[in-house]
Image 1 (tube, helix red, strand yellow):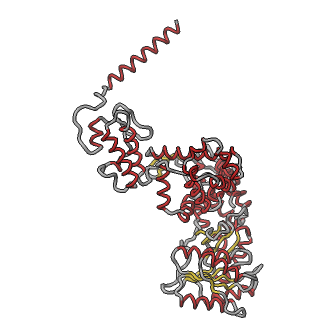
Image 2: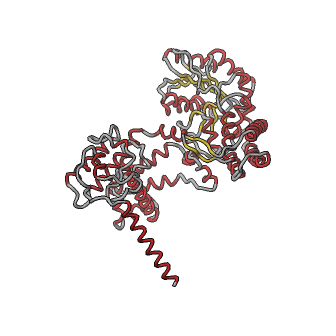
Length: 572
């Protein structure tokens, strides 16, 4: 949708790369790239001019600081960073809603009424059902009212969608009723049934006309909806502005819903509508499925346009389709090296529920740059993987090492209509991922915030050390119990008998063994180790007395002397 805009801002950033300060001369080229991208995206000319003027004014009026504070740390910044930050702030201001709320709530005890308006073909009926699903998932009692008596089969379409989202639909009791009477009837039923939200799906026309506007004005007069939302297709471009202006002048819109934001249209209307009409965007539709409607966030949209992704939006998508307890269990299974092909297939299903893969990648910071450079996103690869996994036996899905036996890969390839090379590649990638995650589970650094990860990693490392040949049997059993406690405890309250371990930054290396990779820390003696485990220790370390630092220095000097002697011999 916003590829043209993102391309222009990338070009502007590249032109300012290496520039020490922002001046009239070097900023002009960057502004030209941004101007070109705005006009190519069909942003209204006046909006584009005002946007560029504000960016230029701020860019030239600021002193570029080469160092900045972020989360208590000093970071290096450049003139290009300052320019993009100014563009980001102005874009957020351009699209943001001063009200800051999705809909206007009705007084307590009264249903909140949402009236959906717009031209035909903009997605009013589908958006009404999506909105009903959203509020139903929030625990609200919703009623849909079929007030579109103009378009053939509009009532039947809303009934089908209502069943799909499990929301009741009130249709006209008689076909000779007017839309105003249907809406009044729906509002009365909602009050009797104590509904929280009522959504009117009104009629549209191919173009704005007086008959349509009078009909909608009558509904507003008799039903007094708190919210009047204009549904507009993002592909309509600047026509969106003319439509929004006409509806706003007659009805007083409280917000807009932009549909088909997942398409390949230029999308300039989404940037212009707030500036031109004063009507804020409340929701955006990003697909045909009923769950592809989300509250509009100006900062998230600006971040995606500038190529920085939308991490908050990605997290919200993930939260909507993933059970937190199940996700935690799956993560722990991966860390314990118990991940199977069934788990892998479940993860793929979760990703597919989050929406098109291309949309997800756009929300990942800087992934949009890779996509713009020709990265191919093939959703059908998921289908091939699913076919291959489902062609495996139960034992093969649980233990991928069985594929080392001859004939298994060929059998799966025939069952899934793929080639043996594709099956082999899938198994190799799965084994690599499984091994990689298993290794992470043995370290603390990357997943230190995952519940139980630190405790599990430390217990595993201690078990490995104490399990060496000749180790004490009692200590080995203790280490085994620590692993089990770390897994069962999930990181809450620390491991039994080891109250100090959760706060440690990592298990330091034992005497004579060196520090473990990625674990940090020093090399404590036996007394320090005993203190760490909660007990005292007497006598010397089991590995013998520690060597003094001067012994180490003498060895370094001796090696250096030997190297110098060999160099002199070669010169002779």
